[in-house]
Image 1 (cartoon, rainbow, N blue to C red):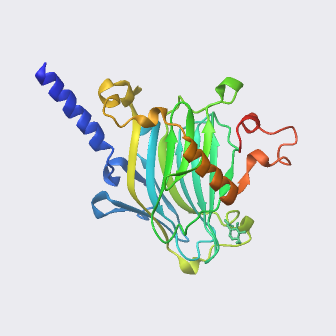
Image 2 (image 1 turned 180 degrees about the vertical axis):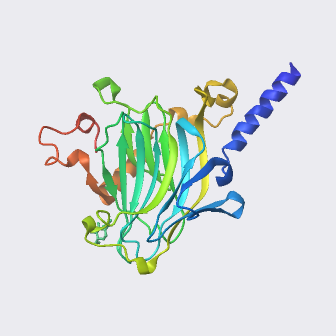
Image 3 (image 1 turned 135 degrees about the horizontal axis):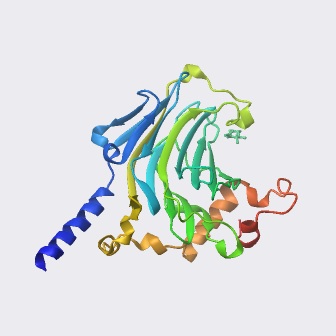
Length: 286
Ligand SMILES: *[C@@H]1O[C@H](CO)[C@@H](O)[C@H](O)[C@H]1NC(C)=O
């Protein structure tokens, strides 16, 4: 009995240690032919973009629910035409996806934080924000909380967007397809900056975005089994996120962001949806 509980304890410790974050351990550099780099013993990751190619990485693990934090420092200076995408996605034509995309700009003009959410292959749920700081001057934390009841996008701990589980009124919710974390830095000067009018200035290349302090409190899928189905990981005390929701103070902060920093909301774009707004827009405040 003593031996058994000791090994359970050790197992629990290993699970928690695994979430502490090391890019060598948690991610694969997937494209860019040397333009993506893991540095400082796995504590720092950089992506670069030049005229020939961008670069990207993805998580080794697949997750089905989690609270996932990453710190990003975006391309500084004249970043017009560049897009840094950071997202969770499953695979296939009816995939689920939770997106952060950072659209660069000319020096001194603000980045756009673009968010979207796909469920069972259907997206079209764009919301865009300005940030209340310069995202190129330092690292800031971008988080996705994904549990069975809601998805919350946060910036430095401030929630900016919530997508609730509204399956009860027929809105599909991502809850059965495991997702990987992906990120890439690429050239999108055909549309990204000021509607494609401002092109990438390659004299500023290579462009670099940096990542650190990855942390996942998450259910890891392997061989069809979720790490959260074992009671030892659930009792580790790190799992409040599984049922987390916004308290009234957080709701007030989200409202503040949406009132002051939101620059596009599909839920108020009546011209785009002449047959009526998507159902989720009719029940949640935008
Ligand atoms: C870039 O700056 C212009 C002018 O401030 C602004 O209209 C635009 O939304 C900014 N962002 C992008 C991605 O174009």
